[in-house]
Length: 435
Image (cartoon, rainbow, N blue to C red; front, side):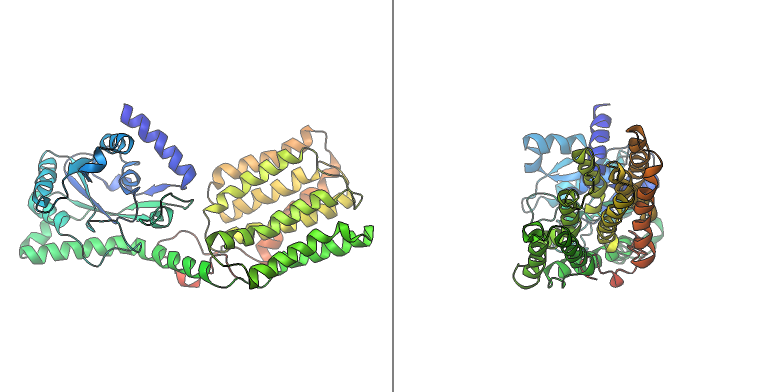
């Protein structure tokens, strides 16, 4: 009971932190001996494999880890058993795993023997899992862990926000391999294990490497959705005020874009800040400039900012053009919403236009958490302005929100064909870092 409660709590936490999902857990036998064999990209792997499985998976764990106060207790709770990694002790670990299988338990093994150095399966796989399957007759259940190398690789101290998926494959029955010689049977089993794991793993590995290349690559030139709104707003506000003090933030932002292109060293955080900058600048500057233009500021700006921050959170996990498409559309929604304010100057308008756009985009792209975010955002957009007294004057703002979605949908389609599909060709992805 306690293990089930902890497992449920950790699974809920992982679904938020890593958008965790598991496919194929029903392929694990409900009873009897079986061997789960998976790639080993991160520190999280035993937990990732265990979360969707009601039976404990008995993983080999370094005995020193099991002596750590918190981590050791958690590992034991999920079924880990100690292994002495001192030279010459490998046979005792093998015998312990064999006894567990003979007792009808579920044993987990990482054939690589260590965490991956580059995210893909190591060139040499250890024979233990295949040998155990041949000697005990237990089926070998291959599993692929995708995204965990980006989330928490061996060289990083803390994990990051990355979508993680576990996929269990059809079990491999060892009986047909027993007609071969022992060495040949082990090699054949490991080859089949590698084939099934890599079929799902390699597209993600290639995409991860492409991401890293783009993070290290040169920054793009100022893009239209970045420089265009800043220059347009500068002209509009200067025409109204004839004061440079009102428009200098626009030119400062243009200066930032040029500095990012020419001076700022490029890395992951730099690229992410650049991609988000246009939406952040446009919303912040409009929030200040609306009274200058003779338009009302939104009521409850803090509430609107919180809603938009929540709507943007899932895009921390998205790859490809999806996240950048959302940000482009958010800029368009802010500008079209400003036009709607000129037609129908209700301070409730942005509470309809911006969340409605975010809901439509998440629904169209089936983004991370869309089943939860779409109804929440749509309910906020449709109910809150009406509850606060809005009426027919809200119609232009609804048109502005949906118009921004249509612009993204038909003029700059984002993320099409870039689902997290094991069979997808990752070579065509720009990963949202360049146009």
